Length: 397
Image (cartoon, rainbow, N blue to C red; front, side, top):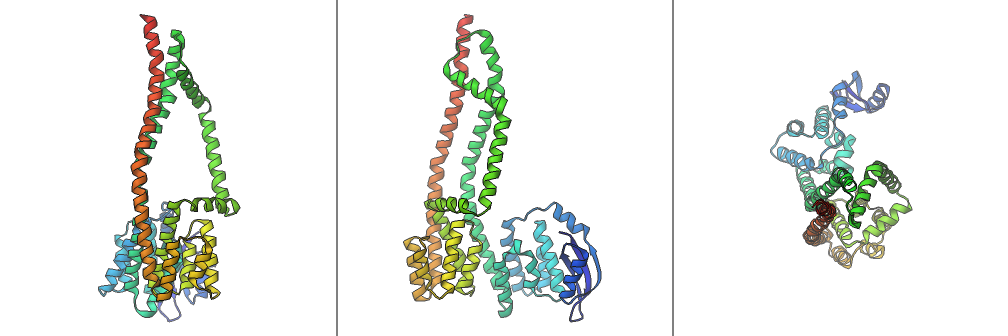
């Protein structure tokens, strides 16, 4: 969508300068006029469109640093506009830098921070924008930004633990299959002619190897296209959010590790919002938006509707069938004692430890299995190649 730079006067008679994304210049003029801004100059911004061209996404890991830096600068007495400019100057991510500079311009023209942030929901999320809007009313902006920074950092660390644990097994597997693919595609076919010309007796294992190499050479591209098409069909079917996705997500949720990770994230997000003073219904609604598992999302939506209708949180959680007895007990105790956020924090800690232990055990088991499997495959190829070579050597002698 085109980006337009505008200059004008707002309702208070102050200069209003900034950027707006709209489908056309007329649409941008109409939107600014509806916002009470008398536009004196508006033009399409080529530089920002150029930035967008080469910036398809932003790095989530940059968000904790952005919120932390803003919090520190504001708590030091630096004005918000200056804090936004300083943070933008030190941020390498182009999308975030662009959003911070745009927010600085809008805040300078008299717009509230939360209003300036609203167009960037894909970066900062509706939850954070809502928390910032609430904090502006009670004068807790710096403290809330610090809380958001810690929350984002905790989420990042939790995700990185699982990702980093799988890096080594993935690298081993990719290298192993790469070596096998190279041997089958380039090495084995060259040896086939040698075996046939020498008239050596070719054993069954070597025949299987030659057949596999020949198949990959003749039909490898076709096989790759089929796999790619199946992957595209699967992705589209899964993205449709129909019965296929619901049933698949339900089966995935039955896996203990997936269930523990999901419960940990739900408890973490809920406790964070409750500590920031959000009502339970609103906190649940925000949590639903961040759930990727369609089956869990449906169940959590029903829980939210039940609480909105006046039922007890512990009651609808217990009847949902989504959570373990520990989770239900924590919610019940927290609801009775009025200390729900603390109990949810303990649930988060418990499941985080549990998933960390599982990840460590899984990696310790999967690494030797991968290495052994690749070793067996490579060993089979080597033996299948060497056996007829020995036969040729015997014939020559």
